[in-house]
Length: 249
Ligand SMILES: Nc1nc2c(ncn2[C@@H]2O[C@H](COP(=O)(O)OP(=O)(O)O)[C@@H](O)[C@H]2O)c(=O)[nH]1
Ligand SMILES: [Mg+2]
Image (cartoon, rainbow, N blue to C red; front, side):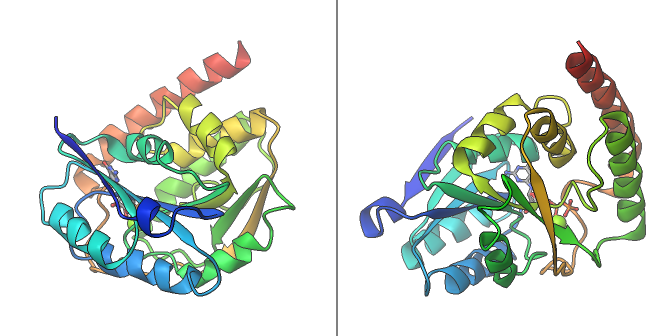
């Protein structure tokens, strides 16, 4: 495995109160637009620590990020080994120096302007989460997500949240680090495990409706490819049992 770190943020900007962390895998078509969109929305009001955590891409993602780091200040990890969504988030969090972090996908499905809605609630809840009221994903993907969210909520007696797996969450960086480090079972559904661990850790979660758009490159999901579904379902059910065993012990 080779890993490369890029940092044009520290010398050009230095410090910020907010970081936006994006996991990135094979997003050569989308990453420049989605990262720049966040930068353009946030930086007129305050400095932004943009952190891109890329791994395992087989397209031109790496060179797009390298070029982008010359245009806008950012930090990036580029790794030849695929770490998965959870691994990407955990490694990216270690680069964050800001007090708050928004974790969001890099495929353009979230609208950066919604960041301000979450930001305004940061003192009210430990974790502010975007609720994808009209979720722009394939039907099978939405049904699967709903099934697992219901299972998780009833198994772990979670409060009645609308969208625990929403990949658009704002919190203090120390909370993100503490919870992410504990997540080890649900590699395909990081946010399910994260929300359960947040609940068990006594952290409050508040939701606010946000826009959910089609992927900017119009192609299907990187994670939940239809051919991988049976394997993912089995892995998820196994992970759920392990988490239950650990938390009941
Ligand atoms: N670092 C990293 N990011 C990933 C990996 N797999 C997916 N992603 C990113 O995670 C985000 C969500 O992936 P996506 O396929 O859109 O999942 P979906 O929206 O849940 O269907 C995207 O920004 C991907 O680039 C991975 O193995 N490593
Ligand atoms: Mg997506």
